[in-house]
Length: 122
Image (cartoon, rainbow, N blue to C red; front, side, top):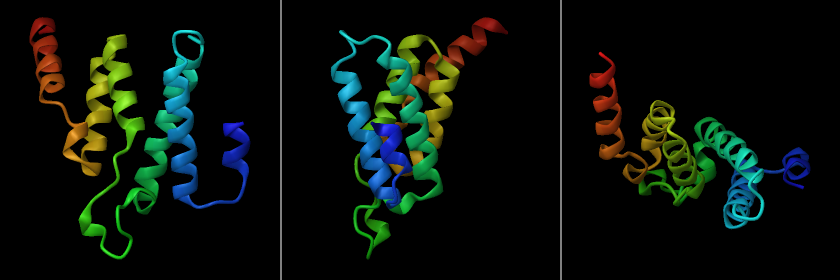
């Protein structure tokens, strides 16, 4: 259903909220539908690409973009999921890309974990 929704005419904001709603539902059902985690990750990555291309989709106030961005739950899901999977460098890369949408997506702990990992591998 989400793929069909993404094919319909709409605004970037429409697509963002469709993706975010789908990710939220997949996260709620992750215990019963473990295959949904792959789709969840894919939709999170797609949402990140969307908001990077059209940040106006997540601006709090279109008349005053300086006010900042709405909370983007897909970013938190994606960073957390990658970190739990052990994909620390990928999680950090997403965190760094997402930081422009709010400091809440950047993790000092994640930076430290990757730095420690790099030291251990050197």
